[in-house]
Image (cartoon, rainbow, N blue to C red; front, side):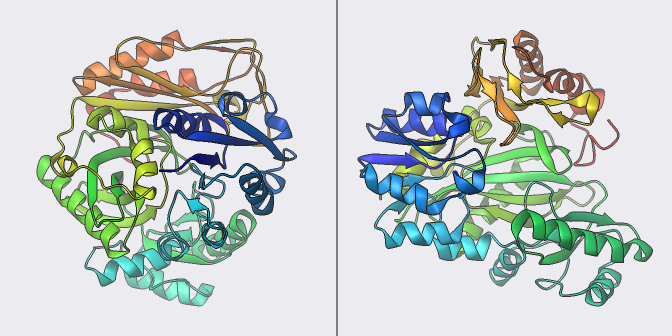
Length: 445
């Protein structure tokens, strides 16, 4: 078992990893930027080291500084959380070279599955159905036009190294293709220092369904049901739930079996997520990508399975075997998560950093809040705008919706703007309540 884990992250996910580590009897090291000097992850870790200024490139993405902190504190493992360096193949490789366990995928798996077009090719070789599209990266506009014509409009252009909706453009006709292609390449270069893009068929009523998996080094891989992630704004998730209101037992089993096959095909170890596009018009699903890390929305799966995913992620990388009982897990009840962001919905969701003058979170049976903010805390402008996750669990989806609305009603976050009222508006929408929505739901909301 690990003696000490350095957490190469910040905010609520850093606190989440600290809690899991403490319950396993493992000491923790927090790294923080000067902007996070008063952060809770710094306070609750056993040790804390400043690794640089607010700019992430000089702190949370600064590999030499993080490794130096690990060596200085004798940490034998590094947990990257999500975002930042969590899917950085170079970082994973450097950790291994320095005899530090990277609690994430090895560099080979990240390179294979973290690059979307490469991941698709890998999945096709083992019989996993993928979205119709280009065979790998599209080199130029002319090739792209020919591919788009062959698969039929509408199509979507995606950054090969992308995420969070960046470097992504939907194209409805040939006339708009060239500008969209060039725009996607430029945005991808700025966001990921890689202008490679690929093309896929665009579905008009798609659902975003993902399967949580855990794999150990002994060859065991288990699926933990699906998460419905179709409520998105600009390709970024807003509300997640488990199980999906549209997936039946037969389809769920097929998706879980496919996810296990996908993970085993690359000898995956740890926590990961296989993301699918589900077409309700045909009941077919297609592999989109694999996230080789823990997900923001993992708590909804924890609620419906009663499994601590972060603990088990750590245990898998420590060499322990997963319990065989996870082969036949039944989902219990329904769970919903709302992401609370420091942003102003009335001003096109403009970020709203600032000092919190008052904070009160909800409670009660089946209510969980993952956050790292408190009254008097100043939200820096340098990082992601998510400041809390409110997660509820109930016996039915209807009860879960009502519980979430009540919980959001109890939330008090003063001093900044948040998207709480926007979330409540979604929860009261008839189409959402009926489960009748897709990834385009918020486009005209």
